[in-house]
Length: 221
Length: 262
Image 1 (tube, rainbow over the protein chains, first blue to last red):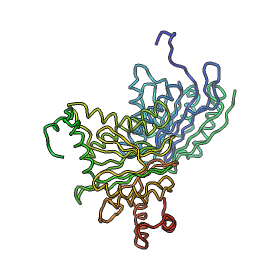
Image 2 (image 1 turned 180 degrees about the horizontal axis):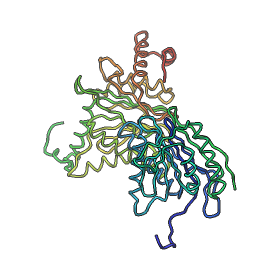
Image 3 (image 1 turned 90 degrees about the vertical axis):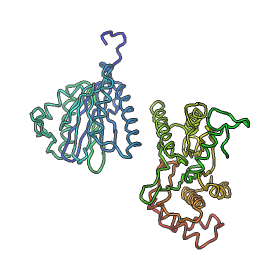
Image 4 (image 1 turned 30 degrees about the vertical axis):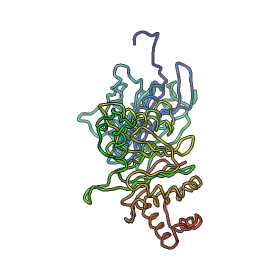
């Protein structure tokens, strides 16, 4: 890893956010793909639907993200063949953790957030590091703009703080519409100061009636 | 086929140039419950008779989805069929992972046939005791293949395997020339008729048969019991009011009359 002659990773930038509500989950990611000070494309989706009620968003190295998504999709297909049903979000969360740790000594350079509905229909968000350490939380942000976004979410979501012990269920009391508006606001703010965040934000909302997607324009500079 | 001194080992040839163990494996297929397959230019239908071991037990699963575009129906040792289905599913997943496209049916059946052949040439193995009707749709169109325990495979317009399959084959031989122009519903109806032939008098109900279909715009899936029973009932009404050799047009009208929520 120290030898930079064969540096195998690249940081494509970008930011992801997810918020869990009492009966919905919002997952959002910007669509800019950059390398260094250049933009490769303004229209790249970092969000992937893994199962009926389970969506993953990741920032980091998009090459590794593509490989990780394919890996999980194949494992999900095997699960469906064996169990005749879709994987639940908590099950997928554990699978993702195991898949990441499997490459502990040559990691996937991806910072993932998994969002969906658990078996009770409540929103759930799982946040990961690059090698699979994960935790269920009420909200999370990853990527280049995360540092600008997390403090705002801490303040605005009115959830019990995830830093308290014992760990309290940090699902936000906000409604779905309020949560989506908040996501749009935080992305607009992060875009102002983070050069790697911008162009468009893709917002995916999962609730009992299914999955819907919307796109919002952001500043292009 | 009678016991002789050349049939103990799959690696022993008989003086007449036969491998008896392989032929005995094909016998196992003939003992299994019937399965039929029919193909048109755009759809392939598989239908099987589900024999339960007793009234207390559940039916054996004889139709397996392999991928969105491929499914199989088996006859013979269902345990062997289950294991082979797992292999086929893995092959499809691995191909799609590398090439981001569905595995062509012809390639899948070759791999299956090669796997079967291995078991006919190793002294520590036995041939698979299951015949598979592989139904699939790919770029080159709709396909129906039959894979034997011997490692041979053939493509068919329509075929039947398992016990009393000869009755179904006779029925299909009379009709197969028009299958290519059949609509999806006509294909299912004829599959049900073929299955009926193998039952030889026993009543056809949706609880003793399974029907699955794959076609353009339609991923492989099994038809649910309710819809199936409606089709069977419509079939029977038609049968009572007209002779068996009714022309195609009459059957079409009856199809439209019966309510079908497909």
